[in-house]
Length: 442
Ligand SMILES: Cc1cc2nc3c(=O)[nH]c(=O)nc-3n(C[C@H](O)[C@H](O)[C@H](O)COP(=O)(O)OP(=O)(O)OC[C@H]3O[C@@H](n4cnc5c(N)ncnc54)[C@H](O)[C@@H]3O)c2cc1C
Ligand SMILES: NC(=O)c1ccc[n+]([C@@H]2O[C@H](COP(=O)([O-])OP(=O)(O)OC[C@H]3O[C@@H](n4cnc5c(N)ncnc54)[C@H](O)[C@@H]3O)[C@@H](O)[C@H]2O)c1
Image (cartoon, rainbow, N blue to C red; front, top):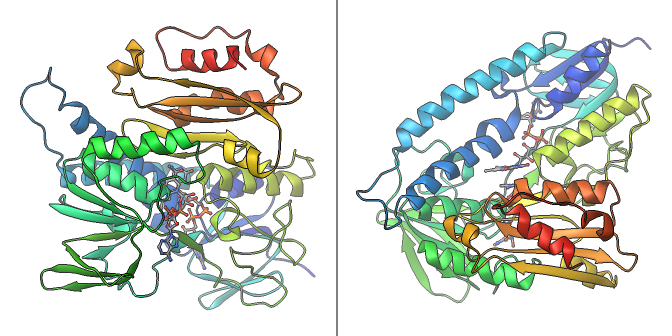
């Protein structure tokens, strides 16, 4: 059989990185994207980049409230949105230029048969197909999403003005980040979630400190509240909880997870599981030569994981024998203000669940001058080593913890033991010196 292309990428999120690599290596490459202006995907247009831009702006508002500043500043969301749009259009342009050797096909693609994709009225074939169609917000039954009063993160990142009050439902990555954003920006914020603690699987001290941080930000915490129904009424969103109690808020942001986009598969040979398109460790689906990467395979919903997966697939197709993507080595984080939570390798709860003997070295940040300057007195760091003294994981709660944890991520990837790590002398005054202290006491 002759194919139109050597490789076809279905979905233009992080898949674009794979397409650029494949084309550079000389493969006849096509990329199908339903919204070409959305090239770069959720991460660029309504995920990582805009959310971190908004958090950064809100952090400035939060920090300006310290007593040594006078006057008050207000976040102009319309201006921020304008700035965001111009940055995104620049970034999308840069990605489009990188794709100069890739045939970009605009339209909604459907895998109608092995090796065959239909895009609107056109049918194209390829010897290898990489599906990267992402995910969409999950709205629990009973909640009526309308994109105005009952919203998802997509609407937040296009808001033209801050609401007076908002309730955030869900205490995962989006719920916590968005609650931190609104509260820091001065919006009366409620965080509603169905469990009793925040970050149930995090180090108990971090989970406790995070709760205190939200209280300090002025967020009203409503744990153990499951929403049965929520719907826009004249006076706002009318919420009924499972226990029958009623509540009303002007806006409700639903952040209860994202589901893989799997409708694209219209051929029985590819299995779809509970979390997404089933794949093996090589991200190959149950149909040979067909791969699924990023959010749509339901493994880890993170941009850097999606990128690592697609690059692995392409390098393998090019015969380069890349190292398997180690899911534990992927840094995970939740950006709250002022401290973020980041972890890599095994967490304390994972080590305990798996019955692994471990040593923990933890350092609280309170009482230290540098964290105090950054309002990070609630912060803490914990590093874990195994019985053979190898560093196996870390959980950090500190400003920009997602940056700081790179040190531990590299130590784990490089299979560094605690004795080697102890040789490191990190700068003073920084947050990394507290990490140095963790290494010293391992
Ligand atoms: C608010 C928010 C904040 C986030 N923050 C972070 C963060 O800080 N760090 C981080 O690592 N991750 C973050 N994420 C997650 C991150 O955005 C995703 O994990 C990442 O975008 C997944 O990439 P992907 O390529 O799998 O999917 P996507 O980026 O969603 O790309 C899928 C693409 O496929 C297209 N598509 C879908 N179906 C079809 C079809 N049938 N035909 C053609 N095209 C199609 C879509 O239009 C889209 O462009 C965040 C997500 C959200 C929502
Ligand atoms: N900083 C980051 O890296 C970052 C930021 C934002 C989003 N993301 C990615 O986006 C994905 C989606 O984020 P998210 O916060 O929507 O999902 P999540 O999986 O992180 O959290 C979902 C929350 O909703 C709750 N929940 C699930 N089903 C529910 C239901 N039926 N009723 C009530 N509560 C329910 C869960 O208990 C959990 O607290 C994450 O998996 C994450 O990987 C990452």
